[in-house]
Each structure stands twice: as structure tokens, then as C-alpha cells.
Length: 79
Image 1: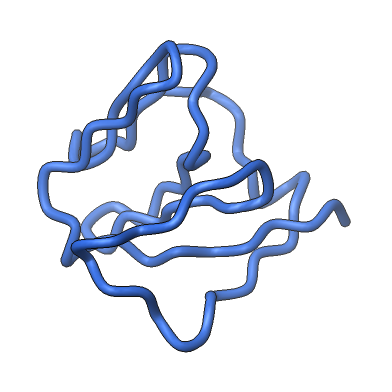
Image 2: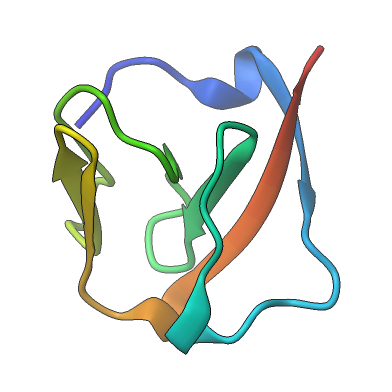
């Protein structure tokens, strides 16, 4: 879990149309929002990070998603 609130740094906009849970895109400006806890996690992970409920967690470039149907893909731009 990261102590950084990414909403203070970035403005997030949902990707439309929403991608299929079976094929979530990833990239430097793409983030995943967990529908259960509303935490935002980068789609490309460098350090250990997870959302509060544990649906999204990863480290060293690998992200594990327990329930992809509860993930919203967001594009983040610096404020």
C-alpha cells in the first residue's frame, strides 16, 4: 500500500469506452481505480504497492488483479 494520494498530484479521467476486464491496457499514464476501496494504483508498478482492500497489488513490474471486473482504467495527467 502506498501512502501517497495520487489524486493530489494527478487529474484522472476514465478511459472511454471502458476496456474489457479481460484485456486491461497498461502504460505510463494509465492507472487502475479499485471499485471496492476507490484507491488508485499505477498500471506500471516499480515499487511495492496495493489498494486498501487488496484487489490490486504488485511490485517489480508485475501487477496482480484479483477481480478485474471491479477495476476502472483511468488516464492521469499532472495538475
